[in-house]
Every structure is written in structure tokens, then in C-alpha cells.
Length: 338
Image (cartoon, rainbow, N blue to C red):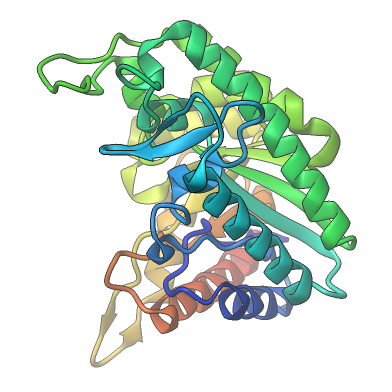
């Protein structure tokens, strides 16, 4: 059955309300669609609730703190880390309440090692990505910390089957060597593709005992397919609007090799006459899928995600986008049967 879930970010600052809405809306989906509730992240609560803060707090034996330019490695745990840890406990408690009695897949989104290293600073120096030794240490630390986090999720939501969704929007830039250094006058040295593959693999292998699946979302760059597949991940996530003909050929190869596709839908458009164009969202997947010769029946292994909410979005906007993704998944499921 075609799956549907969300990327993780959610507007607002009430985590229990947000988590209850997400679990409720995705635990009851139409026939042919597998709803996959996800653990929400609330960036509007400040840097402790954003993608970097929620991943940095998971690092095992690598304390972090807030600096002038964002999160950085620290010599010892301090108040910033304590606040992030308290927020993590609050999030887990909300998940336990919202998912009480739920059985099935539960998506746990976490920023991946390459993107986290590109956003996290050394205690004294440039970004972690600039230091190969620190980069290796971060990948192992993240693997251990996420494994512990998944164990907590299983303990608090015993009916859930955690699916780890690693977000890697900066993976392609890290491999291409185009990310700016701290000064902005030069670029950070490129991370060789085999090294990026190995670092992703460290996390994928490290969380295997506690994850039913591991999926890596490469953002808008299809060139991330090779390191993601090479890492041993079960699925690859990509923004469907970024895929051209060449990219779809690469996607077809990955799917034929056994990887599942997690497709991020384009924003929903609507008109006064016709209303929301759900068919266009479904077409963004199914039309090129058929064009590259992939079988319709294999659409049943695809999972759809709405685009992440922008800064101006409200909880109602996010909920409407999630509902639209469910309806688009229903259309895709119908085409898979046809």
C-alpha cells in the first residue's frame, strides 16, 4: 500500500497538541493508504527545537552549546544542552501520550551526519565538516545517540515500529565542496563520495537493532542517490519537483535494486473553479514513474510526504497539507492497482 507521512517540522509551540493531531490524522487513513505518524519537531520553540538542536542533543559523549553563530561542540555540558534535553523529554512524553494504543510504523526524523556536521561548529574553529577526525567522531556519536533515542521511543510507545528518517539536505553540497567556510571567503573541502557513503553507513548500521527501516532524504539533489543507496539505507527520499529525466532514470535504478522511494510532493495548488489540484500532486510521481518504465504495482512501495511548512505556516496549514498528501496517496494507490 502507498504510504504517507510527514517530514517532521510542525508550526506552533504546543508539542502535545501537534503530536496528537499528527497521530490521529495518520492512524486512520483510507483503504490502500498506510498512514505513518511521525514525531513532530517544533522549530518555533527556538534553536532547541530546530533541526540542528534536536539532533545535537542526541550526540553521545559530545556536549554542545549555543554560540554566536548557532550550535557548536562544547568542552562540557551546560545550560543550553540541559534545556535541549528537557525539551527532548517533553517531546517523548507527548509522543507517549499521543501514541498510546497505536500500533504500526512511526517515523522518527533526525538530521543526518553530513548535514549536522555542516551546521554544527567546532568548539574553536570552523564547521565540524572541515575536520575529518571530528566528522568521523560525530557520525559514531550520532549513531549511538539515535540508537538510544529509538530505544526510548520503543519503550514509551511499545506498539510502534520506529522508522528512522535521516534528513540530509546538505549532502550534495558537502560532496561537491561548495559549502562556504566560516569566513565566507572560501569553500569547505569536499567530502569524497566514498567517505560520505561510509559516514551515512555508520549511522544506518548503528541504529539497525532499533529501527524497522532507515530512510535517508537527500533533499532536492538526485546526486545523493549513490551515497544513500551505498550506505545500506532501505529507502531514499527526494523532492519530486527537483527530478528531471536523468534523475528519474537514476531513481528507477535505485528502485529496481530494492530501495523504496519517499517522494516529497510539490506544494498544493488550487483555483477558484476547480479547488485543490490533488491530481497534479499525484501526477508529479506517477507520470515520470511510468515514463521510465517502472511497474505501476511498485507504486505501492512509495511513501509520500508533504513539503515542509514554511515560516508563515500555521498548524491549520500544516494539517491541510498533510490531508492533501493523504488524498494524493489515495490517488497513487488507485493507479498502482490499475
